[in-house]
Image (tube, rainbow, N blue to C red; front, side, top):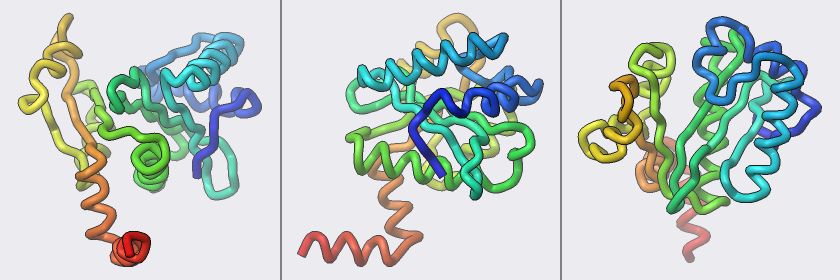
Length: 186
């Protein structure tokens, strides 16, 4: 479902990213293929320096269909950025990709919280975020951060996924995970 970013997927990902329903919502936009390759190289190097975490989302046949990233990592927290190619919208890839990414972030890489800043006009992403039971709107709870991301203009809602809330959800919905963790503690 996920793999580390590499240059082999650039052609496919660039073609998917440039769709007019995807492109406006991509954080690192590339206006041509060579620029996309350059940005991908920079992303791989930034991950090696610990500045971000980036994965390619794969379909069930191993074909690249989008990316999922944690940007601006500070104090065991960062901002999520995800996009899927238009042919994969509404096909059920969003939640499994996020679950795989959150499992890696929280249980392997030491991340404690993930923030999502979503444009108030991006109804598709807002609905996708609000479908996830471990996501919380924190516009008021994290007011200083909310004000910071909206310093120029009030365009974003702020959401948070904490490791604790995510773990609670996983244990509540997957009893076999709870049994496994209890066995490990014994």
